[in-house]
Structures are given as structure tokens and as C-alpha cells.
Length: 127
Image (tube, rainbow, N blue to C red; front, side, top):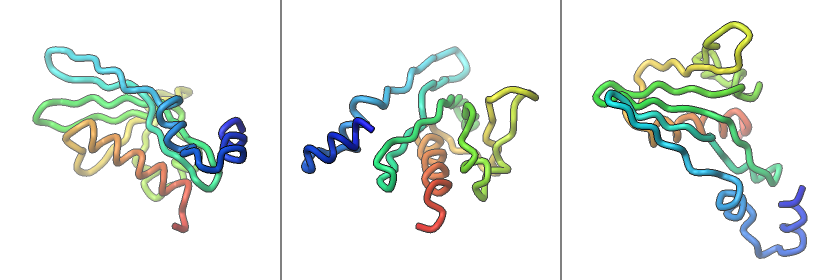
């Protein structure tokens, strides 16, 4: 609601840019001897609604092997996306899902981009 007020008062203000700078945090990096884990939020701006969408997540990068991608409590729209069946619940009654794919992305950046693209498609099915 605050971003709509800003948009109305200051039509020249880049609301998406403001949201990304203020509300989207950097991913935390945890390095171990065998992998690198990124913890943060997948984020996208929804221009139709004039607000952002964030989903907590984790990406584990295994050098030479690809990545494991996790989402916490993904929105229902994503679960009903064409690739929604690729999201598998880790534990009964839990909220963490693992993304299973035929050919996993090899880097954190590619994994994050893929999930954010899925979120975009799920929220804009006819674009």
C-alpha cells in the first residue's frame, strides 16, 4: 500500500527500483568444504499489482555437479504452474519444497533466475 501511495504522489518515482533496493535483501553465502549454500529470497516485481513478491529459498551449489534448489511455502499459483509437479515436499506437514528437474542448473545465478522465471509465469499465465 505504501508503494502505491508513493507512486500516486510521485509519478516519476521508480517504485520497482525502490522496492528492490529497500525490500530485497542480498543472499547469504555459507561455504563448506564441499558445497556453497545460498540462503535468501526469490523476488520479482508484479507491475499489474504494483507490488513485489518474495519466496524464501535456498540453493546448494555442488561444484561440478549442479545445484539443489529449495523453496519455502511456495504460493499456490506456483504449485499449479506447468512445472509445479517438479516441486516435491521434503517432509509431510512441512513447508520446504525441493525443485526436481531433468538437468539441474550448474550455478546459483542460473537456479535463481529459473525459479524467478517460474514465479513470473505462474503469476502471469497469459502474457
